[in-house]
Image 1: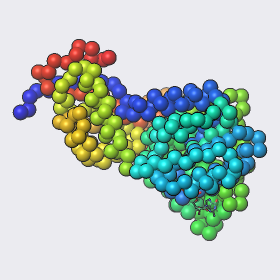
Image 2 (image 1 turned 90 degrees about the vertical axis):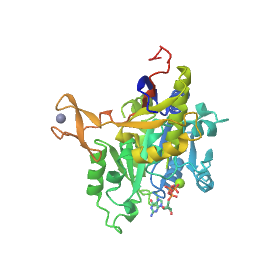
Image 3 (image 1 turned 180 degrees about the horizontal axis):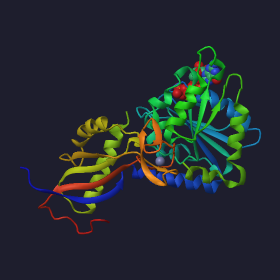
Image 4 (image 1 turned 180 degrees about the vertical axis):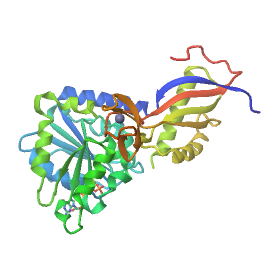
Length: 230
Length: 125
Ligand SMILES: Nc1nc2c(ncn2[C@@H]2O[C@H](COP(=O)(O)OP(=O)(O)OP(=O)(O)O)[C@@H](O)[C@H]2O)c(=O)[nH]1
Ligand SMILES: [Mg+2]
Ligand SMILES: [Zn+2]
């Protein structure tokens, strides 16, 4: 039964299809001049709340839009639509993360060359989204002060694949005795050099700085260089 | 869990590669997996066992080679292993580095076939 075997060498990425599509999307976004920013976090860390505020602030000067992924309901898309910018819900059903083809499908009929910023809110999940490239130029990872300072140590991969960290719900920091220094040590340990913003969508604290950082992506066409540096 | 979706991807890509090389029966699929791929090996192995039954490669086992996380250390001016996935510092001099050169692998590296089978000569196609 156990006949001798031999190996035939193959060199292929497991997620070849997703990788190819993500690369095509990234190239399309670059040509269309739209800066694509994705958001990942655990469920309820405040992605939609942050986006609601970001959309309102950015729409003053930019053409902005958002896609939002959830397993079920279009509640988040309806919340985002209050900013009166184009939004679309991606309902993933049983899939716990977004994949590049879902983004491509959701964008059908959209003229991305008429946008300056496109935000993609991933499904609330600190594990699975790490593995799928969506063609974004910048990936924000959020974690809220109520989640514990060691979140990055528990989910190192997602923090490692992100470009910028955003600590949310800072208005609650004192109430939960949030140790900011400890949180930043955890972040720097799993992702040395990661830039961090402390914000509250409720009070607006730190939002101007984050908006400034996003605006900088539009300057001098350096948005496309960002993802090379990951 | 996303490991089932990864397992299905492996089976699809492996079946495609086997067909291209006119391989009839794949005994095993060999992959490289880095800790920063976000894929949990044990979960992947169980998912693969489930997924292969109704796939084009029902006989195939999954053989996983675990890859280390390797960074480029500016201080050592060399590629070095890291302390741990929680601590991306050079394990020799403890300088932090986010210049990851290894550890994100998610690759199919080889198909294991019975030696008798005549495979297409274009091995590295
Ligand atoms: N106090 C306070 N509460 C916040 C803040 N941001 C979000 N919240 C609350 O946290 C809860 C979850 O916020 P969402 O914005 O829905 O979180 P999410 O990450 O989009 O959640 P999912 O899409 O379900 O993963 C809501 O009750 C928000 O009102 C904040 O800055 N301060
Ligand atoms: Mg949400
Ligand atoms: Zn070193």
